Amino acid sequence: MWKELKPADLLFALLSVVTGLVYPFVVTGIAQAAFPRQAGGDTDLIGQPFASPGYFWSRPSATSPYPYNAASSSGFTSSTAIAPSKPSGASTPVKR
Image (cartoon, rainbow, N blue to C red):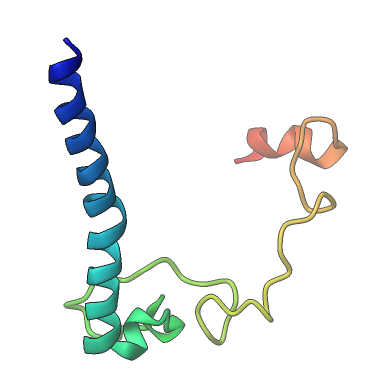
C-alpha cells in the first residue's frame, strides 16, 4: 500500500507547486512584459464612460465626475445605515 502512496504523494506535491506557484508567476511575468500598464493595475480601465449605444452601459457612478472616485465618496457609515432600529429605517422598505 505504501508503495502506491509514495508516487501519488510525490505527484500531488509536484503538480501543486507547478500549478499553484510556477504557472501563476510565469503568466504574471508574461502579462507584465506584454501589457505593463494594464497588468500593473491601471484603474483608468475600470468604469470607463461609453457614449455609443453599441456598448453595455455600466451603472452610473455616484462619485461624479469620475467613475469610482474615492475622493468624492462619502463611504458607508453607521449614521447613513438603514436599519429597523432607527425611526427612519423602519418605514423605508414600506415606502419603496
